[in-house]
Length: 385
Image (cartoon, rainbow, N blue to C red; front, side):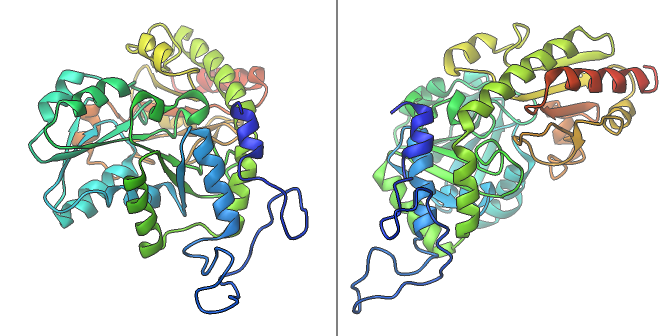
């Protein structure tokens, strides 16, 4: 099956009890057993639920994988994957990453004896230099959040191959979605998504997923999914599954609109810099062409002049809602320094390029001419540079 066919059919078989074409919401916490230990594959919904199982099969197929495990949020999925590590282990991490991931690593997991080195992973020499004898994991975001750097997944896998001990390569594939990027095919061991974003696609449900082809890794993630219990309810699973069915259609429109918006911003006199992998000016544009099948719907940019102009501009838009999150059908604008990345210390943020003048757009699937008009009006109305 091709991508869109998988999205609609894998895990979506007709309900055996009724013939319902759409997978039902199995709103149950427990299951009646014929005798002790004799059941139909389901015993307790924290452990397994038919609606969640259908979602897990669907999403694993979209990444070309055998195993997928759904969680109540992207952060719950991330936390489950980090249980592959033990006290004393070290991870090399993308320095430009989601603020919530940084908060989990720096303020929670370091207390448990894990250590993290943050490097510009677009520089493979920097990745290699950060490796220690106890390095057991590489955490990649690509494109990164919010500066949209590209990281060579196969290149990092090659560095992992140089190590004397096995290390796990994990890719947060949220920005690209499985439609535009397939990290497992490039040698990664685990893919993580915040399904809240493009996979769900409608800003109406929070969720996450961890996906792998490695059975040993899958067993660890599955164990912690059940033991810790950060699972989605069946209705959340059903909403995510419904959203994923149209992922291919939506991603094509997100990317088409984002490319037009990025080119518009790059030409505009009030904009000093635009970050979008689809622009030839992007430092890793050639890598994006090799590693991705499309450039996605995220665009970041910096206005000229005082950084206070960014906040003024964000408040003047009509079709771009000022909001956390991304990946919904509606367009959003975010001020990363004060919103998604506020948990990162200001000094660290600014060293990485996340300044108070940076804005991040999640370009939706509205008519692109309306989006351009909205941006034009706001740019024309802000205080002059």
